[in-house]
Image 1 (cartoon, one colour):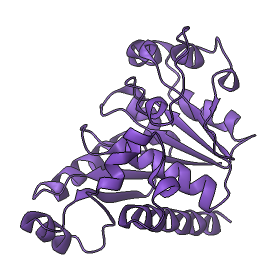
Image 2 (cartoon, rainbow, N blue to C red):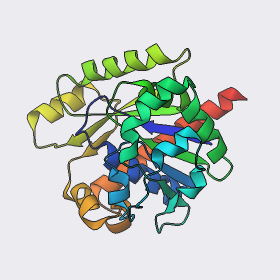
Image 3 (cartoon, one colour):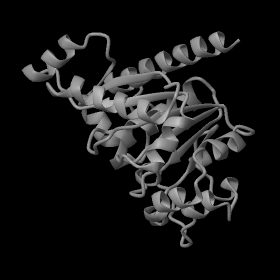
Image 4 (cartoon, one colour):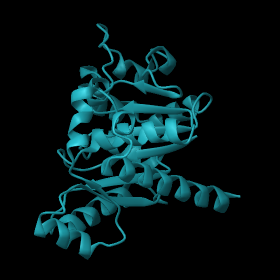
Amino acid sequence: MTVIAVYSAKGGVGKTTIATNLAWCSSQRHAQRTLLWDLDLSDGVGFMFRIEERRKRQARSLFAGDVDAHELIRPTGYVGLDVLPADNSMRELDFMLSRLGQRNRLANIGRKLSRNYERLILDCPPVLNELSAQIVRAATVIIVPLPPSPLSARGFDFVVEEIRRHTRKPPPILPLLSMIDHRRTLHREVLAANPSWPAIPLAGAVEQCAVRGRPVGAFAPRSSAAVAFASLWAGIEHKLSQLAARSH
């Protein structure tokens, strides 16, 4: 199984929308058995897929070893795509992980999940703590959404430095410009300054994902946003194939 973390040190960059759409592309366009694991207590993934909230909050119990992950996994209605939702119990997660002293607890849970899934996509919280450090150590590839700003490159460098601080051999870190509006001069300048960075457009179809409770490829497959997400996932798969070839 491969772990793709969608991580940003700040909120409001479209992280959950990106994670859900990439998970859909993985399962529907590439037929990979995919689990989308929400690690952000706001439970945006559960809302996006209209997953009914359980009364008993157990996300924290998963890390404590009191419950098995497969007891918490929920289907999305799309073949090959499941969700491991978040809940408010994760407020205590950072303290618990620090107290347990198990630096690879998240990675170990991920290895158990690999029996049933080929791709694990993490929707990460916008924090710098023990949980983010464990995410970095577990990830095969890290996707970093960035707003179209003159500070984008600086923000990316900050995230790269933070990732390197927590792992001896950092995984590939891929910047992604999110919410790009080609009508705005500043956005075009940021694109021109970073021509190799993929970009997701600011489009009505993307905003409709949360309204409809469906990934954009499911209801607007020919839209610019759907094409951008499909292209991004194809690039990720290409990177993963390169990593696999090197490991052999």
